[in-house]
Length: 153
Image 1 (cartoon, one colour):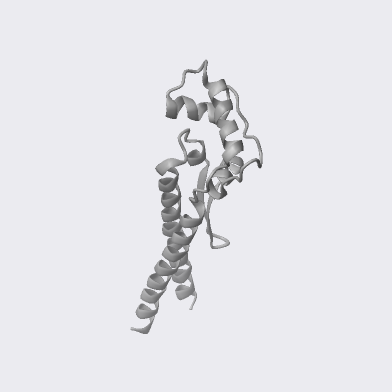
Image 2: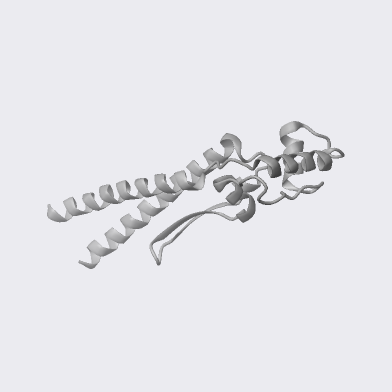
């Protein structure tokens, strides 16, 4: 029975590794689609598996912008940070091709527009989480099913 428990634990860890990898890939793919021009949110994606607790985690450590992308912002909720070193200025330089000199003023205009209209949600973590759970359940069912077949024969 110790051998079976050891194999089962190994199968669970394998399923966690594979499913969190898939979740991370899906989240990054959704970010690349249209929400992460500076790359800061994508770089803040982390994936890890705690083998002792049998726990898998896919997370985004860019709390401010990641939450805005995931859930959106209603109009006149908060005036976004703008200025020369802001994420809006980086976005304007990369996406719009604005010079470094004009990035501060363009970032103000973008921030004002977001203040007036809000920002629609573009979920990337929730779909990734759902896919991760589906993948984990399927992998676990398959892996532990194989173990049960080996034990019965």
